[in-house]
Image 1 (cartoon, rainbow, N blue to C red):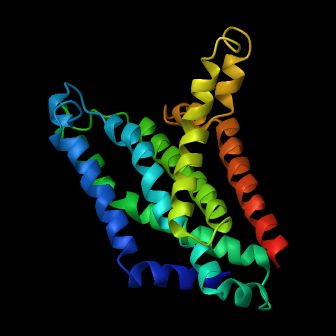
Image 2: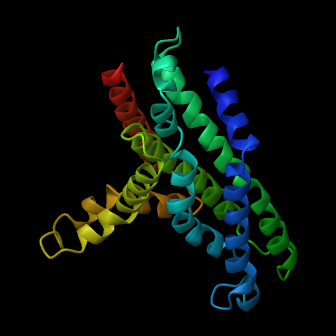
Length: 242
């Protein structure tokens, strides 16, 4: 698994993929944090990082599928997937290696945003007038969210040998599982009866919950189960191919 992880990271950083993904994320978030007047921290009357945690899921919907789209689709397109699955390495090790590489790249993209935290912390009046507990809870939620999207992206990449199709499918699934259940719960058939239960099936409900700064074990279990579910689907797909 470690060798697969190293191979994937080397592939990311030896090409423009990692730099484009991280650079695009930081540029877009920088614009929302400091430039666009409707979102800029400088236009607010209090120190907050809400813009970062509200906009990141939308940006992740496109950036994370861009990271994962080639993970398995390219292997299938070039025929190297047959070489990998016939090697004396467990199938789950191949999946975990590729998955962890994507998650690490997401974490690398988030690390520079700590500068935003430091800046807002310093700008607070008085200095440090920032709810640090909620910020760290939101960062944990954002990492779990990115990890969930990565599991979806890896599954989508296992379904096709076309990277563009893998990207589009992953972006659609990420959007659906994040916001789809919220919109479904607003249908008249669910209102007043099971609307809250329907919302709890979606990522958005648990992401918002953990972003309040209170780490609820139910939210963590949801994300871990969600990740395990899609990695399990990826395993079954590759096992059938094997």
